[in-house]
View (cartoon, rainbow, N blue to C red):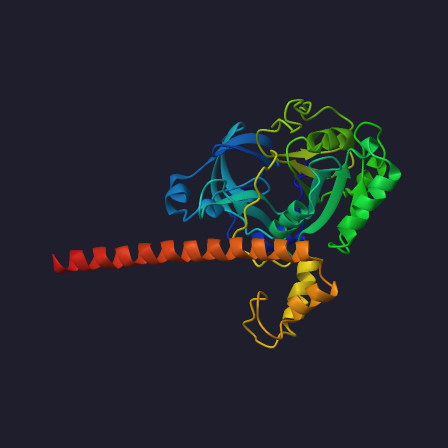
Length: 350
């Protein structure tokens, strides 16, 4: 394989031309496990680590390599390399780290399409779909919603489910598949384009790994049954990795996500929140919070049924999470800055 096979494109080429790459090899991170990386280069795959300087100078998790990144590295033999820098990313999917107030977890970078997978059974949740769409809110990422396990329901039930999605999310494509019967797999396969990178997102047990196996026509990913006692999926995929399928599509599988925490990004997804953002321009007050103000166009739209109450409540919930994340991060930065000043003054006086 060459670098084109792993997703090298004109955007990455442009970034490489803008920086000094002399003396370095170019490669793409295809797997990551606890800061140990597998990188694909023109010479093949190799294990890699980052330099001590990269680790020391990193201000946060976003400064470390992630699956999907293009990096500059030095090869020390055919099996080992040192990563020196990250080529600027043209897209990124990230969320708040589970259980941590301001830490960010990078899901994947340099993504062209986000495949949001939900099953038609108990996992199906419109609010959760909007959460996934929110973290994929990047102009260079095109989301696609895939509903699995359609073989468990009647056509009428599936039609109602799709209509419920379109009532809040208007133009994003929705594909229906069954990993068991194979229905819809050809349509999904036709959307996977050679040289483009697709990131699969969803909870455990929705069938992401089975989808990748079916798309690749090979048993690449380990799969598991749903727990009978909890009706929830077990975590089978334990780390993120890039898989190249027969038609040249580049797929990234992810461990199932039970939490999709918002970070400091502008929440504006196509559909309900898009409408809320549009109506905000018509509010009487420019700083309208859309909660109680007289002359609020958003509240009026809820009264008339133009915006669903559930969609509005989910929008408010996600926006509060983003605001809280930003506020907490700002407070921590201020404390660090104040401490730095205090330390500087102490040394000066001493």
